Image (cartoon, helix red, strand yellow):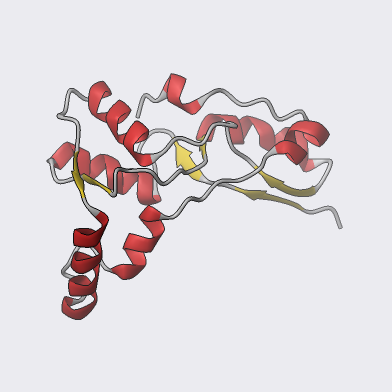
Length: 150
C-alpha cells in the first residue's frame, strides 16, 4: 500500500485556520500583542502550493514536511499583516506579564483568551526541515511573505 503523509506548519491562504487565523482576527479587532518581542519562529506554507504538490507526491509516497523554507518570527509576521491591513503595529507584552496572564487564564478557565498551554504554543519555535520534499519530490514553493495576501 502506497501512503503519503504531509506534515504542515502554519497554513496560509484565504481564511487560514488555527493560530494564524486567530492572529489575523486579533489584529483586525485591535487586541493582538506580541509576547516577549515576538521572537518565536514558525514555519509556514501556502495552501495553494500544498494543493499543487499533492498530485506530484501521491505516486511516490512517504512522509514530507512542507514549508516555504523561511521561518519568520511573530514580530515580522504580525508587522507584515498589520501593514497589509493598514493596522497599527502591535504592542509588546513582556514575557513575565504574559506568564502571569497565562496562570490567571488557567484559574479562570475558557473565558480567558490566554492560558499557559496557549502561551507555550505561541512563544515556542516550531520550524520544520523540508529538504526531503525538495530532494525527492521537487518541492519548490513560493515564499509566503512575498504573497501574504490573507
